Image (cartoon, rainbow, N blue to C red; front, side, top):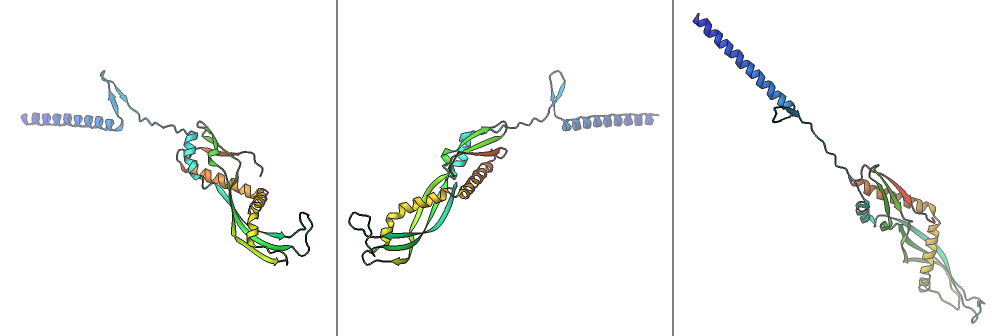
Length: 228
């Protein structure tokens, strides 16, 4: 009888230990599943993960900082080779009468490069951070530099009179006139200026969208009125 009693006690203790183990395991598992804050009153409040999204805003100085280093890139080059005729003659005194057989005539060719583009310092911006939109106001494109290669002069079919003798040095005074002529010709080439604008927009867009602060913004362009 005593033996049966001992067995019952052992079984009872085992059941209690198993119950405690199950209860503790359940509490640990629940704590792992959700974090709780225990209040002094004994109540608990479950916490939720809070995600803070930092609002990204940009201003004009931010964009100028991005675009200004590209001033050397926002250009478009026009290469040309042209020809002309140089004539030189002698006249009677102060009259406009040309002395017969006194005219020199020379046909020549020459080459040069015209660089056109915009001044990035003249770009302005309208920024709407709420709608994530940027309007880029671009100035009228213009000729930035013009190099006429005087060493490219080649002369052909030179006709020399018995009274005068022309030389290449005489052509140097025409360089200014030739450059003006080529720039006027370029101003009439609408396809050149159209390509320049597309090239400029592509460069500016590439610079702006490469910055992660601007990659969610929609960028549009507004060109100033121009004569091209």
